[in-house]
Length: 203
Image (cartoon, rainbow, N blue to C red; front, side, top):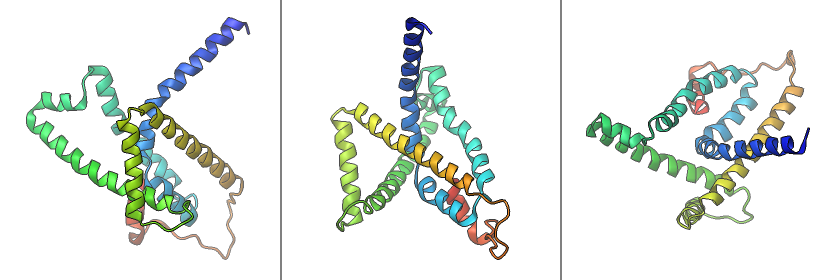
């Protein structure tokens, strides 16, 4: 391979990595308690019984994540402009639902992040205080105009999660036994009692 060809190849790789930035941020925003806690609990409790369900759910959710991005790219308009074009009532409903969802989701994720952070802090701290600190740090980064810094932090976190997920999957696959011990009966997730857990797991 010539020097120019190698340079062109690396240039394409760098350009591809730059394009991944918005996608990584979107993926970071989509990752929540259902992925970090419920999914791991599902694997620990039910083994591989829910693997197909989780795969199908993610395939079904993908078009909804893609719809907004595709609309903005194809029309060069924001979603708010699109709703306004349909009528002010649609815009008002969309803004109302998004306001409620953003406040509830932000509060839930802040509390979740604070609870995870408590495992790494060597001293006791109120969960509301640690959540406030996390929120303050995020706001400081954004208000200071360091969006690139937040982007890099998100990429780092997602990189760690991807590596950890792949590593755990490989370990689980290597330790998988098609015929479990005869005395061990794995619990079934397909019961009414686990319905709430299944909903949380599906995100």
